[in-house]
Length: 189
Image 1 (cartoon, rainbow, N blue to C red):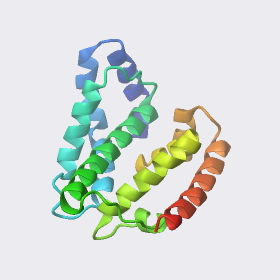
Image 2: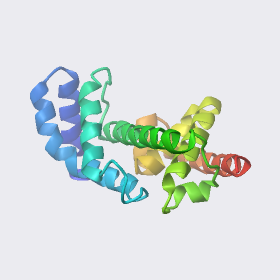
Image 3: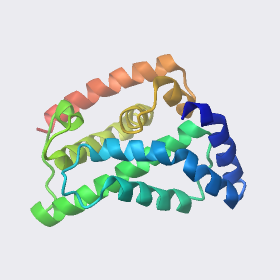
């Protein structure tokens, strides 16, 4: 996918400019990577999850196409937004299921538990999402680094590019955010 990065960026910018055909040419170039992101998310979900990988990709496509207010910068920005949308779709589905089943009470877990694949990851995803929201209120960039690196699967350099900071800053934020999240999730237990 790296080899098509300039082409993806060019098509995103054309799409920004109102070229609908650019979107049609963009979709085949990003489909495999979006499917990989969705598969990564779905790997931690139960086998009977109401959304499957392809459905998650399709829902993300619908939201991406509908998000005309986004000003695409480049490939990394596109995949970061895509990862954020997929995370939001899954968290919303998890919250909805949990509300129906248990009245909406989230189970408290450690950061390690939230990051590991388990048989019941939905409460862990909700707990991690809640902790990330708290971190975002304290330090938005550190929260964004976690989102881009962990959920988006972006490299340090890609994350730095999206956030317009140095790679060293990303590594420092990543380490500090992980430590903060570990402590936060542990206190929520």
